[in-house]
Length: 381
Ligand SMILES: NC(=O)C1=CN([C@@H]2O[C@H](COP(=O)(O)OP(=O)(O)OC[C@H]3O[C@@H](n4cnc5c(N)ncnc54)[C@H](OP(=O)(O)O)[C@@H]3O)[C@@H](O)[C@H]2O)C=CC1
Ligand SMILES: CC(=O)[C@@H](O)[C@H](O)COP(=O)(O)O
Ligand SMILES: [Mn+2]
Image (cartoon, rainbow, N blue to C red):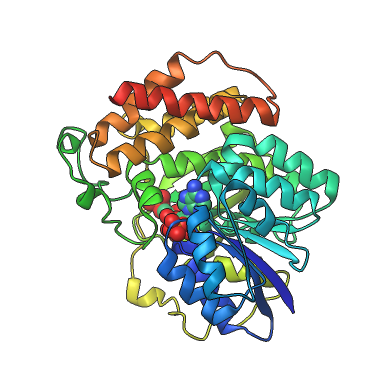
């Protein structure tokens, strides 16, 4: 039996993680979780899984829930995330919280010797060097949940990492893949949230439309697998059936395929090195799909991917700046305060004026993250 603490239980990945726990009650149990402001969903999860400890974003919600559920301990805020992440009864932390708020609980969980199943890519982008160094020091595993990184990982099993020549990340192209930049001037939030293949949270769906999601994933891959940026390619693949590929020096390419369903990589991160059945999942029927399509990415059309390669190659606080500017700009777009193309304009302006600091420590990263968000807000108003 594996005991799980889960950050971001009320979100898209969180809810699908709970589906996996429910499907395999003999293998997994939920002992702790965090939510943000969705208190209705929090109530449902507490009622069903009866965890030991739960964190919510606001103190008033924690106090109200504590009265309703006296057997569970309720905590709140950023310290609450740390308490859930380090719950002594948990073996593994599934980090499915949104954004760089996931960084400090991840580091705390590593220090508490928890293995980390990580969906929260912003944490690896903003401070990948700190997370990987801490994981090495405490001998804990960082298990990929993101579909591409799970595919890369599975395509490396049994291979010698020194034989890798290239990682090939596939990208659906997002909601506007068939539109020109001219077409993007007045697109709405509703249109941007209409992803062709995946049902996901709002922020990552917008990132997918700008291809910042793929940019974050290129950095995530470089961090997780220590591959140089020149050897990480992105390939548009409309169907999202091949989740990513690894090319070896002998020109062989290993790939992982499946229907677009995040529960499969979530489950694999939890069951590794074993594989459990997925009785409710749709099987891949390649004859029915018949054709798979591939095309190269135009970095002038998808400028956010270009920013991510630039930031990744530079390293240092520019990664934090790019990530925080993107989080703030996407938030503003979702609130209809800026237009879609302004997301990349804001990120570019903020990155251009940043004076980069290499090998930043945690304090520097947290400071730069905060200042960047303030700068974005001042540019919007
Ligand atoms: N969705 C997907 O298919 C995939 C997602 N990912 C990554 O996984 C992560 C989560 O994505 P997704 O599930 O789509 O996101 P969602 O927006 O659906 O869920 C985010 C979760 O984080 C919580 N949350 C948000 N902000 C805070 C905060 N400040 N403090 C505490 N909790 C907070 C939300 O709580 P509440 O709703 O209660 O307010 C919710 O539980 C992201 O990093 C994303 O890039 C990676 C691969 C695929
Ligand atoms: C499901 C998942 O892992 C997402 O990160 C997905 O990759 C988004 O799709 P695209 O970024 O390829 O549009
Ligand atoms: Mn992904």
